[in-house]
Image (cartoon, rainbow, N blue to C red; front, side, top):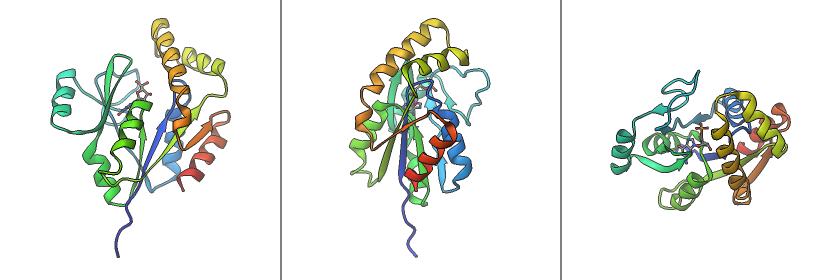
Length: 188
Ligand code: 5GP
């Protein structure tokens, strides 16, 4: 029997929308889903684990990988580089897994452009905060960024929100249980 190819599930959200928790919950409940662990040149935050949250690499290492066409897409976000491993994604999709990519709008656009040549099917989901105030509050409460970084992330969030119409689906994260359920229904 021919194995059905999996699809890409691209999830974007401005910082502070609760994306990490949502995706974690979605993965726990759906065995057919696997999350792509991105590579980044930013430093780990407290509690982040190399290989689980990200692969934390040096700028030189990232550049070498980029030159070797290791990445399916890359983007510079908040002065750091981020990228998705091409082999990880293509291998899992070939094995029938649906691969969740938690990436920004720049990355979604690159994958969207390449999907025909890579014969990939993709659905894209944008996570929205209940309100702009909620976003600001969450960013301040999680205490992982300083005031300057928070302002930068809020500016970036505004720019990302202006592009939400490029996505197939939009999910408002007002209530986490409801948002996870909505995501599950979309992915199915
Ligand atoms: P953070 O540093 O807060 O974990 O992530 C910052 C931003 O980078 C978020 O919007 C996140 O979705 C995005 N991001 C994380 N990994 C990747 C990736 O591999 N590619 C792209 N394009 N964006 C990523």
